[in-house]
Length: 109
Image 1 (cartoon, rainbow, N blue to C red):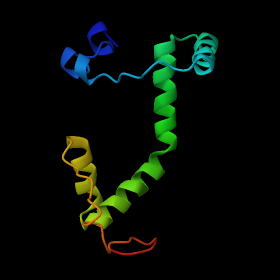
Image 2 (image 1 turned 90 degrees about the horizontal axis):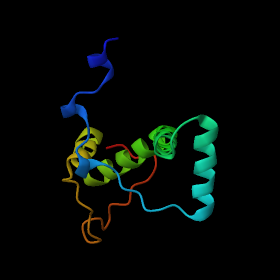
Image 3 (image 1 turned 180 degrees about the vertical axis):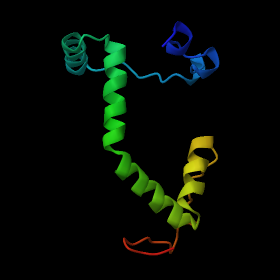
Image 4 (image 1 turned 120 degrees about the vertical axis):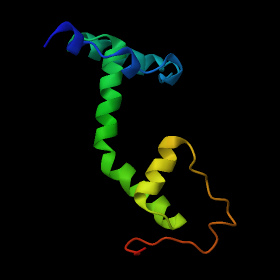
């Protein structure tokens, strides 16, 4: 792999305003992260990113089930709901909109 391939292109890097800002951790959690990062030979930032990605991957099925639930409740496809969430157009339903729309496990549609 050459130097150009190993470095992401500037247009592939997240813009500064797209980076995730996480509030300061509590003392205990910060200490755990510091030790975990040191033991893993990583910086705290890289270790925190790794841990977050790992946790999200573990929750993938649950997240998808929740999106499927929300899509069915709105009468749209999973793909439509997913896309709306990603592009920032998904709307929360008001109590009056969701009245009588109780979703039950196993419902089709």
